[in-house]
Length: 64
Image: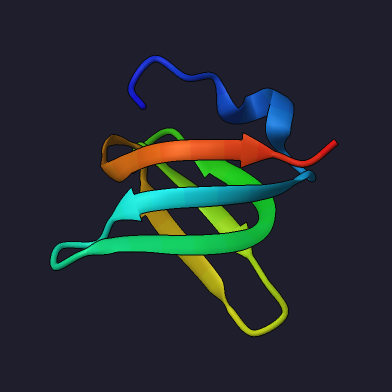
């Protein structure tokens, strides 16, 4: 998903599919922030906060 500008999605609920090494991971969470230094997005669901590298993202859907 290189080239995507995630800044406009901060604070919105997203569905994300990403390569987590062994299989494709799936999360439904709120996009909290973007860390440009780490080239990653930070998401939060009711249980935890995760950092996902942007270059591992396969697909993103944004809730309206």
